[in-house]
Image (cartoon, rainbow, N blue to C red; front, side, top):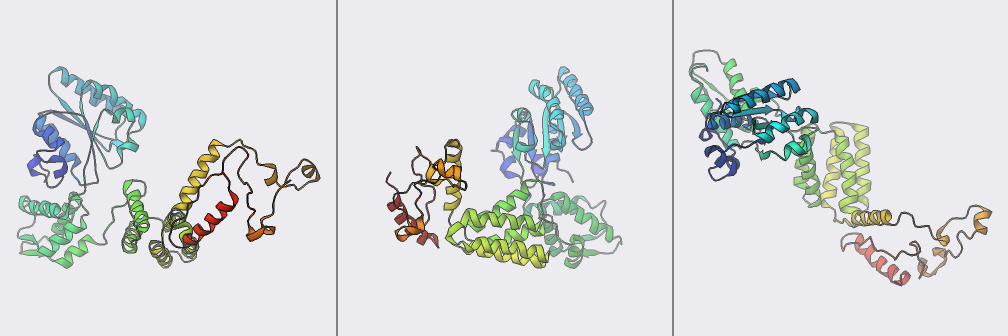
Length: 419
């Protein structure tokens, strides 16, 4: 089943088309070291073999799962010897992200000198998992999950080339093919596994067509593509957060469901939506924070699945709220000023004086109690440190409750600030 040429590969047209860099490099036999980053079953190992075949090169394979420095040194030694004899070597490093930083350093001089053409394969983000020094010598190519139509083509070819090993008169109904293709989640290997399972069940010589119901049983409960450490985890969380920020409750619920179905800890989501309530809604609807805290508490009391509904309710509420990041931006600006002016003393009139000595030293002298002032505002009073100008961090938006807050603040600032 493994393709032998670029023309046999289904999918990855963004990389392998005749006018794309990797497609041009392979067809023109222009070798360079690279990393293939993509999900399982997207064709990383196949591409490494095709690159080797296109160059008529030796292919050496090691894996970060069961190899160490000894295996790396042996592979690079063989590559160096082959180079001296005038033949190229493709060193395919599967699961390259599993090598630690010290092990990755061993590759450096051999990639630099061209002793081997390094082809790494990883399901993890190379920017996080590979040494910057090694990564700077490699071109990263991103492979995507196969589209459903591409998986259907893989299934069709599997049925065509597998006539010698599949049961006689074994076939798939159109509905079964669709179920296998959609349930593969972009993983060609998973689709082929479905066919192997179906073939193992059907061992008679009679004409047998795999029905939709049998295909559904073989597929079982769909397994979401979700890695609690990896990029998919953060991509889904980001998608939900941005859907809430964009005021789309339907998309927000979809991404929430994807995370929960994939095994994300609901308490993590509960913490995340509390953050969203302050970052993206703030005082435009102060009740949003209460809603999310209540959802968090409800989940802790009820657990799964009952408590998940409270989280979903909170997500819907957040998505439908008026939005403001004024509090988020204001706090960030205040933190920046706190870093710049972190040694400035508190003005005497703003200090508390709990002891007689502090009173004698002048702590609190000149402080004006706002409740005793007209309209509760001590006009002209300064609350920033001496020598630091009044700053404006909080800029309410014209939405929700902040619209009223903005009117009040304009009046307050006009009365209290002279600079």
